[in-house]
Image (tube, rainbow, N blue to C red):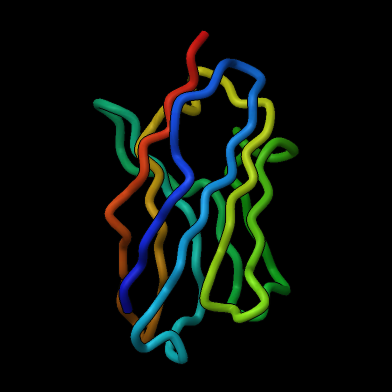
Length: 115
């Protein structure tokens, strides 16, 4: 499974960004996908996850009500709509796929929120 993210960038506090992740390869084996982030000096953390069918989503407490994860119609893409962005949301955001017992990661996309 290969994952490619896009959509990061620089935004002011209170602004919005939409991240996209496209999966290719053995996508039929994907059970769930999600977004993680890693800020400088901090551990990578789960931001949001979604099951293959899209029936279940999970969010980190710090982003609930501000971020929304969704799947594309082809089920090979996921998106992260990020609203009301805060400086503490600044991080590299990684797309993740859980497939056949293995984790797959994208290369990451930088999100910077200026105060």
